[in-house]
Amino acid sequence: MNIQKYLELNERDVVTCCPEDSVQKIASMLGGKNACALPVCDTEGRMIGIVSERDVVRTLGEKGGDTLELCARDLMTTSVTTCSPEDSMNRVRQIMYSKGFRNVPVLDGDTILGVIGSRDALKTRLEEKELEVNVLKDIVITTRGN
Image (cartoon, rainbow, N blue to C red):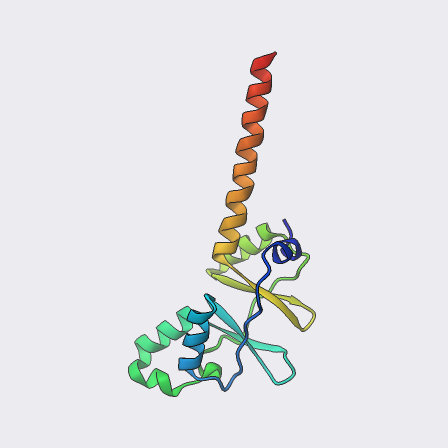
């Protein structure tokens, strides 16, 4: 399945944050929108980074209570690996596995279409395997009948 098809079948709002957003606001957005990562966008809406739950927790472990004094620009990853709507979910899974990511933003030019998370990748893989098992069961049943 390609990413565009997955996004069409699983409509959800694209949630982003600004570089100036506080860690508290980021945590609230992550929890409130059931998101694992937020693209960080400039005033023109272009993605300039990404901030994840991991970033918040890692910084909290390093800086303790001072973390609440920080904002998205202080925590975000600026070198972001992305995918396009034409990419396959398999390719995105490979990116996640090889680079140790749990979230990959989907970009169409400068437009953010969504973020594919590890749960999305796992869901599609399980659906593919279930389909394969059902096809094999059908083949076995058909073969036994002859």
